[in-house]
Image (cartoon, rainbow, N blue to C red):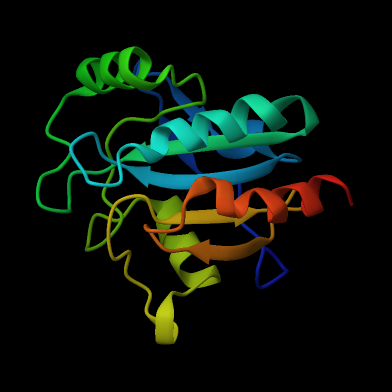
Length: 166
């Protein structure tokens, strides 16, 4: 963790759906909405709202980062190619998507280890409860809030606008 107890350490790496390993440092200085996703979940239609937020605010400094995860009732069974095809064809997703990761348990991705510690859930719970849990991070890297899976992306929009307008 960084000196600030609520700030992400961006020196974490992740693999894009195309297989390229990148450092999250390339997103430093941007407002981020980080989401664990799945293609066969009841919340999957949220891809549409996430894409709309991205299109609306990307030029103002918002980036949505999608991390597919198969830990919840195997609702992301596809490989990277299948995920990319589904998201592009069905929802026109153009925000960055990454290879499948684990968000809970001993193989939790380092980014999600940080997110869970910096923004615990209900009653201080660290575990991710389900697909489409969202974390809002400001351009300073502060993890401001965790949103439950049933929070519609459009309901986060006022908070994103307030951050971008600071």
